Length: 313
Picture: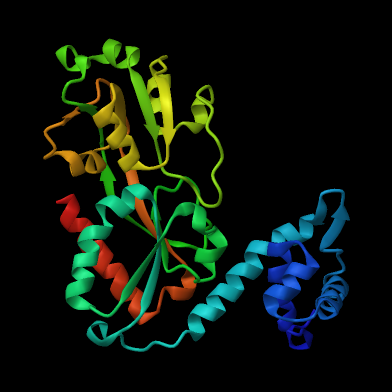
């Protein structure tokens, strides 16, 4: 096969078809007609001597050959788009750029306020659009529709750039009149009622099951390693909700220390060290290769990194 005889537009067709796994959606994404996309799929099948997508009871499913090609084609196109990005200087004091950042509730509460202060000082006309994890997908970040995502991530596409902003330990937060303060240890912790709070991943979230320890996260995994389990009465994805509930009820919120510190001056709240070891968590910033060389994006990444370093110090 001679690359000089290949219509390189077919690589774009293949990339979108394998991501959408639907001819109509792929056509809409590329803003072409469905017959044109169907013709593109036929040409790809002839070129690769492979069906690429096979219709099943669950819809169109990629062949093994297509699965092998998917990350390779995606990587080639991302590299090409990144290389062709214009490299213009960014002038923050005169910019009216809108930066879209997906931030977990934890990141939005701890990192964004001081970042916003720096933006106000250095780039007063810029705008921040803070989005939640359920607002976006990995595809949105990968395609540059979202400038970056700031959260804790277990698995990431290999094409993404990433940076660890900080590591955080955990704290227990209870109201100042909670009876557990008379004798706070692992036994009394386990006898108490708890609020579960954690980040949500990309996309629409799902309901939690107290019995599904593997999906409950850092705190419950640490307890499971001790052969213990806490009594969770409330599940929430919002750190401020968890802290307000702990402030008003005899409930224990175990959460990252920097989130708990937001309430350290509140006399109605007590912050305690957990009575067992919990591994630290990592807050990461991730972004698309498409934006890696963009001058305004480079500037924002540096500003976020400086803000994180100041908070961590």
